Each structure stands twice: as C-alpha cells, then as structure tokens.
Image (tube, rainbow, N blue to C red; front, side, top):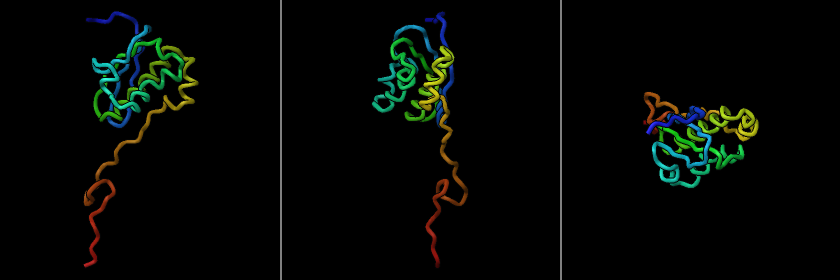
Length: 132
C-alpha cells in the first residue's frame, strides 16, 4: 500500500527517541509504527500528551497522524511524538504556531541522561567514603 496523498512532515525529538510524523488532511486515528496509539502507549497520561498538540490547535479530529518512532523508552517516544505532531501542525497551518508555542509544545525538551564518570557508580553517585 503506497500513500500518494499529500501530507505535512515533521520530526520530533525527546531524550534519545526520534519521531518522524506525517499529518494527512483527513479524519483518522493516530497510528504509531503501524499500530494505534492507544495500543502502543496504554498509559493514559502518555495518550493525553500525544494528543495535546491537536487539542491546543483545536483540530482534534481533522487530521490523521501516521508516525514512525525509534529509540528511547515509552515516555521519551511519547514526548518525541508530541513534539513532532506540534511541528507538523505548524507546517500545515502557520496560524497554529502562536497557541502551540504558548503551550510550550514547540520547544524541544533537551534534558537527557547525564553520562557516567569514571571512579563513580553513576553520573554523580560516589562509592561510600571510609575514613580508615
């Protein structure tokens, strides 16, 4: 099945997850890696995060979202998907930029896990100090 329909494309990122989002101008579900978003992310909080850009723009049921997400865990992937959908909406209609930016959906969340340092157990956790 090859889609020859026009779509709006954007990339979303969060932690080490990358979401490649296509926004089609028709009613339909949010499909992630070939599965419905509800099946892919069963946690309600993640489902709300994914659909937030569509609600803020006021177009909850006007677009069909098809996305491919790779890397990271559930929360990172959901955040990347949210970022990608918001950016794709801006490409589709530049008028959405104001409300999406005000809601903080266009900002890439740059927080990533700090790398481990040598001599330490984790990034900052040191082995227990012994005086003698």
